[in-house]
Image (cartoon, rainbow, N blue to C red; front, top):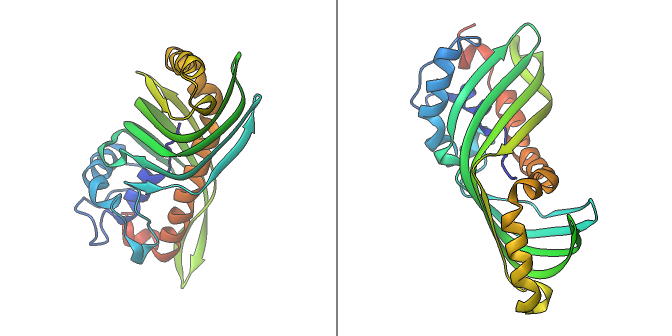
Length: 237
């Protein structure tokens, strides 16, 4: 759910040798260099680099989320995401021929915020308006970025055009929602039990919109960064 989030790992390549983060300058298709460079740079990067258009990503403040999906109306305001600085980079592949960047990573994270919910979750009716805390254990993200090359001031720049992703929560999710059914414990306790017992199917069914909103926010930072830095300035080409 959430993450991912995210896109943030690809940004690391762009700043590993800009004097901002302490990592080696890599060739674009050298995965053996890119993976440790991303990992080493991650904690500093997610703290935010405003001069490059990079927002703080841990703790990340989410824009308001609202969606209707599979019979559920859900909203989240004042949402935050925590856990990115401890993500583990599993693989990085930069395909210069097909202009695609592939990043695989995994992490634990938590999401908090003020939620509203009405409708159905899988087979059960739900209604609520309160505080949500969601813990996700071992989320695996496979991210693909498509790009083109554009000339700016006589230099080649990366112009991102689109992104896609796959995600899988591997080791569990725990839902804690206050004021379900107006605080009726006879209804809210069974619902919380149902959510936590069926975490796998629920995160698969309803996680997409959360990830989409997070990804859009990070994608915006990514586009801004690459527009300010030529490829030759941030990598061996």
